[in-house]
Image (cartoon, rainbow, N blue to C red):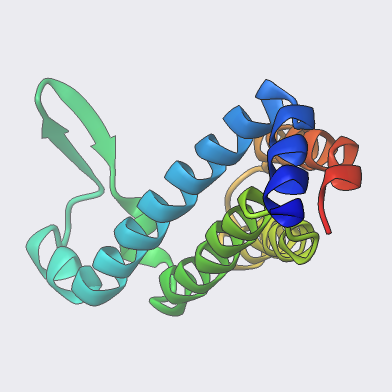
Length: 147
């Protein structure tokens, strides 16, 4: 009974922005795990289908496929694993566990590094860094509510 009261108290003390950021992290992490896993499994088919084409017109938009043609297949596997850790971290934080913050933060930092290593021709991901810092900041402010 006492434990239920403390859990209810913790729920009330968590800020709505903390909950919103966790929900966004879980949605983004889950969808990213799925999409990167699908691309990893089908990258050879994608490359065969669009071989010799750098750009494809899809629904009136020009899509640049150079990422799929040039990048190592293991990039998508690394992304899948790291997004799974990110998702797990957000889930742990949702359940009130501090280890989730460390999982999430580590995975997000490694995602930035992996993208920089595998995508050498791309510019530095400043926007991704800003978003990562914002999310980690919100989670760090709420560490006191996690065990």
